[in-house]
Each structure stands twice: as C-alpha cells, then as structure tokens.
Image (cartoon, rainbow, N blue to C red; front, top):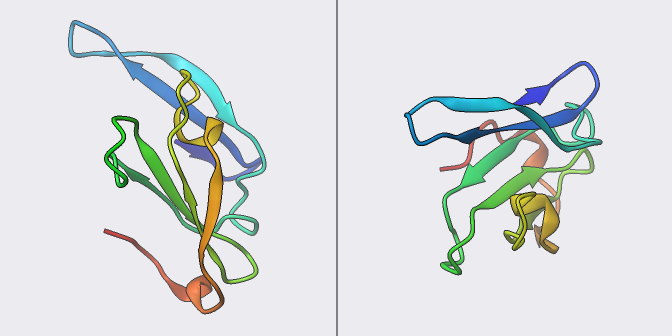
Length: 93
C-alpha cells in the first residue's frame, strides 16, 4: 500500500490464520509525482521472489527484481526497461 501524501510504501505480511500482520514501512520516495504507477508482480523473472514495476515521473519504466530479504522488490536491483512514453500508462498487467 502507498500513502500518497508522503510516498511511503507499506507492506502487510500474511499470517497463518489468513489475516494480515501490522503495517510495516517498506520504502520511501514513492510519491505519485515520482512514481505515478506501482504494480506488484508475483514473480516476473521466475527467481522465486516477488517483483515490482513502476513508472517514473520522467516517463521511464523501471523493473525492481525481488530482493532476498523481507524488504522484497525494493531490496533488489532496479532496471530501466522502458524509455519515455510510460508516463500516461494507468495499469500494467
């Protein structure tokens, strides 16, 4: 989840009882201006870790390869996979 006021991403970890754990800060700087679109990907690169895609205010598209810690995608490397024109995209599936 993203707080659009300050750009903080939060994670809610799943619990064994089918509920969610407490909100935990996950990342900073993900304002709507800086990262207009954020899309989670279960495992786009098939390495066993969740990934994330974002558009950037300059119109580029970034892929965040999932990291190996609890911090997930933002802990892994990010790669620019699209140059220009991505600013108007409203969803990625």
